[in-house]
Image (cartoon, rainbow, N blue to C red; front, side, top):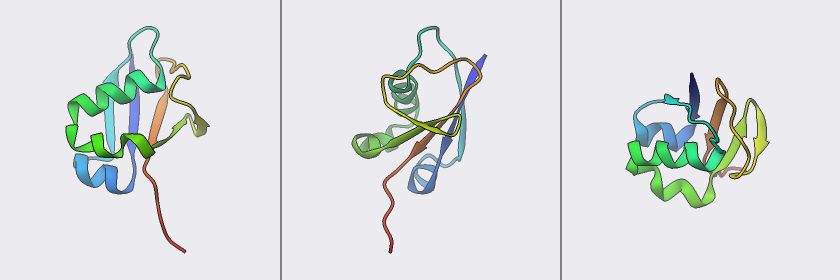
Length: 81
């Protein structure tokens, strides 16, 4: 079973993709999935302190659990008026 990670805006630009499939590991949290994504795509590390997370379209915190088959969105800071 996998977790689908969606990347938005500048994250997608840096990673060169908008979608990553990552293997689920028992006990996964938002933080652990995010860390594995950053290991695979080190260009994203600079965004880590300011990211927002949404799990199955609901905002979550880094320590929240991630179930198998979930969709985790990594949302960078945005600006505009």
